[in-house]
Length: 294
Ligand SMILES: NC(=O)c1ccc[n+]([C@@H]2O[C@H](COP(=O)([O-])OP(=O)(O)OC[C@H]3O[C@@H](n4cnc5c(N)ncnc54)[C@H](OP(=O)(O)O)[C@@H]3O)[C@@H](O)[C@H]2O)c1
Image 1: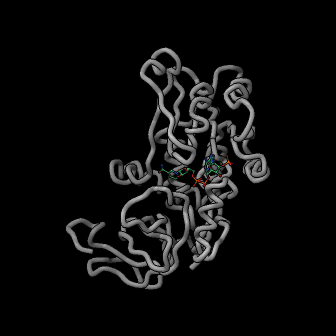
Image 2: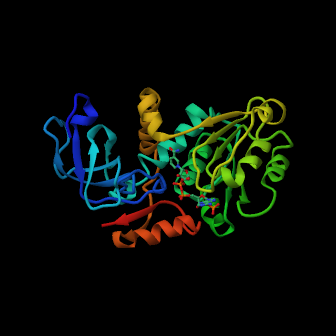
């Protein structure tokens, strides 16, 4: 790679790469996967401060492979004492969860947050962070994953596959709704999320599209759902608001140091079983982070 800016001029390769759940974004030619952890096997001419063999985790394109090229600025060292696999999620799911909850969602102690897909990698991070900051957490997940979600300490866990989520949330909040919703599956839950959000001050942060598209009209916003709707994309955050992203990463480092953010335990698949991993995601059979192991 070449170029005048730091990201273009500074590249390295990771030897091991891992699966994350952003694989549904399609570019041509398409090599799936965004988040990878591994050791540096080569660096660009202008790279400084990165040692060959150093364990790093970063975000780039084409993580479902044995080697991956990343901008040096898009990576961070694997925390001391952690394995590469345990670090997965540090640069995708955790910053996504923290950014949605705090700088975008504005959650504060005592506020209530509705977290959809709470058993997923991002959802688990969000439940953990929200509880750490003393929010009341209402989580949704498939019934088979409730045990895993409950272990994170949410106040309530609802069935994401049945029941009236909006009615349940309104019942749990005395009819006023939640302060923040993290909306991962709007095709299935957007209408319920809007109905379960506090009028005037409530925020709905939309970050996933796994269950299809959803829409809202201007009439809805004026006469039916007087809420704040916030679109979130981690890549856009790093490019358009690097200061906020930097603040998020610094806060994550502090959470690691404080032991709030513990080493992850992703479910591993052999690289050759990548299609199985993606099929499990699509079938909603997966819990937590998945890892492809080359
Ligand atoms: N915008 C961003 O920058 C950003 C960053 C990270 C992640 N994301 C997105 O956020 C979402 C959650 O991320 P994640 O890493 O936590 O994903 P994940 O681990 O794959 O969790 C996804 C969960 O969504 C639920 N779900 C509901 N309807 C679904 C459907 N039709 N197809 C598949 N899953 C469905 C399932 O939970 P239940 O079966 O328990 O309901 C599933 O376990 C994903 O859509 C991901 O693409 C976006």
